[in-house]
Length: 115
Length: 116
Image 1 (tube, rainbow over the protein chains, first blue to last red):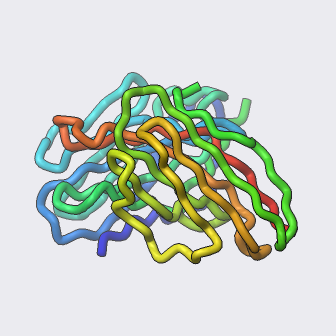
Image 2: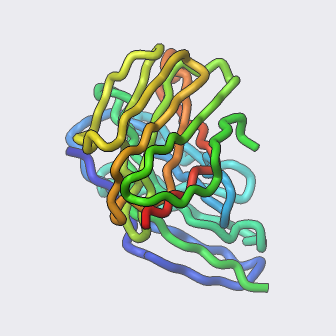
């Protein structure tokens, strides 16, 4: 069974700094999808970025980018020029291609951006 | 707003009550999900419906009963719950036939349930 591990329960940085959230996963599949979701306080969870495993190029969405290391089964999220609105819970998630629509989530990292 | 609406946003109920959570989406999605979010635990998938048919029941106790009358609506009926069932219940939807295969989920804001 696939597992996703986020080893940082909480992180805190100053506004405008760069922060990296860690995520590792375990799977025997060769192709799959990885996601980072953001859940702001009392608001809906939204997709931040996604990566398909067979694509070697790291995904980028504006200030958000990932460092995907397939051999190491690592999928970290980098937030550049952090903003107060980035304060949220961040969840790393895995979805295999072969299985049903089961998205496996990590425990989450609570990120606080301080002014 | 993501397009997935959940009601009520907050619910307090006793262990003998019967209540229901409702989820609605008009995104044209054909798969709907219930997740349970508890403090300091990963999101737990409870149920999956594809084209109104239940395709996954993740060993959820029978005191939780899902209903999907059509592809746009999903209910979670609650009966004789326990205090440990207190959690945030998230509904999500997706396009099962998404060509990319990513099947990206769109979440609602959740229903915060407290069982006394």
